[in-house]
Image (cartoon, rainbow, N blue to C red; front, top):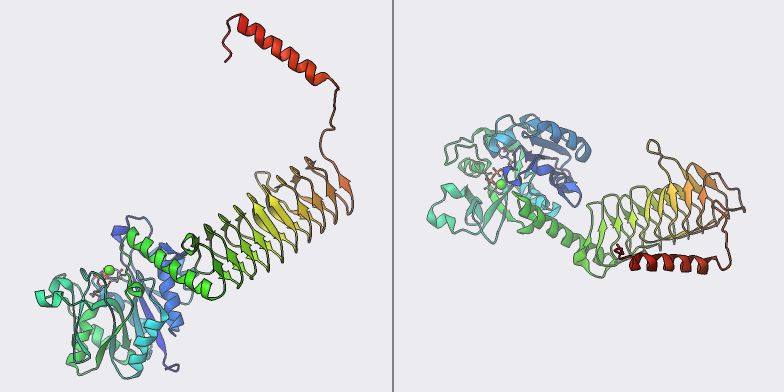
Length: 458
Ligand code: UD1
Ligand code: CA
């Protein structure tokens, strides 16, 4: 089958009114990626080298988004939405290039997996002209019913066109199909619009193919993988299913999730074996964790690279460009952005490190802030290896702290510090013996006098 060429035609022209959104429905995210992009990925994984995206509503926005998630896809605009068969024909030009297999998919069915598509393609390779992907939803209302006879599919009947008897059938059309490229255009062109909705139904190609003596069969996908998204409740359900699948994968690949249902992954999270993830951790897009890391509770991590055996959180925020090298530590209430934390360096408490390098083995004290922004531009802070930054210091960038530089706590550092130097950047302390006692006595008698005079104490 690997020699068979395949085109995916992904229908995404619908408005998605029930999402109540300014954003086209299929651009809503699941695991940080537009749902239609999940469909594209599944098609690619099932061997579709050609990609046609049929758009309509929000075409400009869709085209723009597609350059990111499906740069190879050709887009076709379906001007009027006259039905699913009409939508597929918008991609006539792509279909007529002569692929062996044409996979028709819906942009709003994001959980479809490559296996279900491969199974359908396999039936084409065996000689079927049309393979319909069916499923058994807990409630069939609204779905087209698959009508079978002797292991062959004879028709798909839209609910509105079903007899009472047909309506009882639990095996439903998931919407997706694999069609032999050699027959695709001929079958689609034969579809008419004489039905309850007056639309050109893709599903009619089943009966048309049968009438031509072609082989038509159905395969079965899981309910979950065929879930279609119509509103934000469906969207949340799809997200939950996606997350559950990903958590299982992570655990089976050697990651400990103490409370899996509280950990959220993105579509591209990479997480190596022997990482332990505590409860309530969120991974945004672009996270790579080599392995052996401890990610403590309530950490929020996005666009970050975490090398071997790092320790992160609890309550850490790693933003894009955070790059933790081996055994680095970023502790509670620390934020790291666009900064390398080199091997074994520690940023343990209440700190902001942005646009910076923290050299190997350096220790950043509690409350340290890299002052990287003057309201207009960002500046770099370079902290050498083995440096010690005393607590509550502000490092005003651009600035360099040399290797093993030592910064006294409470400093505001505005000039670079050479290797092995000690720098103070704060007012010198003055201590006056007995003056504390004198001050208390003065304040106490003033308060007593005020009370006696009947003045309110607040
Ligand atoms: C379709 C199937 C139905 C199946 C159900 C599964 C048909 C005729 N019916 O019904 O058997 O059970 O999916 O969810 O295929 N679209 C366009 N242009 C159009 C019409 C639709 O791009 O002119 C797109 C929509 O954006 C959507 C998809 O095609 O992504 C399906 O269309 P929709 O109208 O939702 O079909 P259903 O009525 O759900
Ligand atoms: Ca639908």
